Amino acid sequence: MSFVQYEPKGDIGYLVINRPEALNALNAQVLSELDAALDAVDLELIRCLIVRGAGEKSFVAGADIAQMKGLDPAQGEAFGKQGNDVFLKLEHFPIPIIAAVGGYALGGGCELAMACDFRICSDTAVFGQPEVGLGITPGFGGTQRLARLVGPGMAKQMIYTARNIKADEALRIGLVNAVYPAAELYAAAEKLAAQIAANAPIAVRACKQAINEGFALPIDDAVVCEERAFGSCFQTADQQEGMGAFLEKRKHDPFTNH
Ligand code: COA
Image (cartoon, rainbow, N blue to C red; front, top):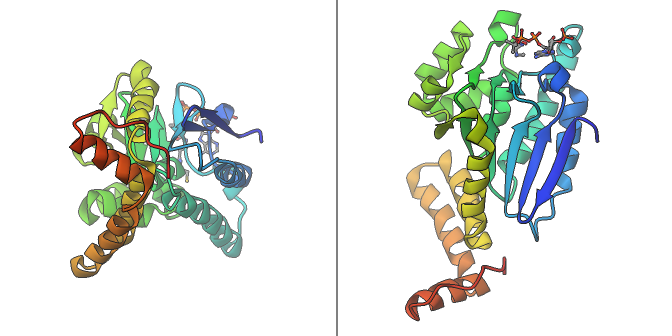
């Protein structure tokens, strides 16, 4: 793999989009390497992933415009499906994924970040869906996930105008959870990932699944997703230890993923 590096570090895994000469733009090879990198994650060991871009300038500056220029409609649709399939795999990945956005997150970069569980960014970050300025629509989920995250009015304004927004505006509209000085971004991501990794992994995974499954459902059906998730945690070693430790007024042992 040359454009995507997977670096496990303890119980946290880093996915690094590593094509800095093109500001980490997503071509078909990057997407297929990202897909393969997800398959390589050891889910017994790793409890949280962080996705970031290589270099200081860019998270991901979009789908690869040079590769897209000559596509016909069927090829365009297939490229969109390739991106959507990988991003759905991220969205449904069993463990949480944090997008640490340092620099440009445009087009496919914004879409990649939105497929993660949540986003934090540097004060140098720039988000946007510039596609209509290139004569296309967003193609890797932008027309769908942006509206779900920031509401349809703001999503439509961003997409129709193709105007980029800076970190402070991304924070204001709820596209990112927090903004950090650029030099502190990855340490902050690692701290968040470590907090997640310290909690009971089966419970964290069940929360991700319940939130994802229930989000698009009416509340009466959505709470059923939660009941399933809730029930699945009982009689696990981690539930026994977590509750036992509370009742015995002691610190719980490290959770085991069992
Ligand atoms: N696809 C392909 N190549 C890209 C790219 C993309 N989405 N974004 C950047 N690159 C390449 C540039 O072509 C350039 O390559 P070169 O050195 O071979 O000429 C290199 O990355 C550096 O980009 P450059 O434009 O010179 O950097 P900059 O600092 O002047 O501008 C951006 C940075 C992000 C504002 C600008 O690169 C840009 O607008 N990129 C396209 C963003 C976009 O529209 N994305 C959505 C695509 S659907």
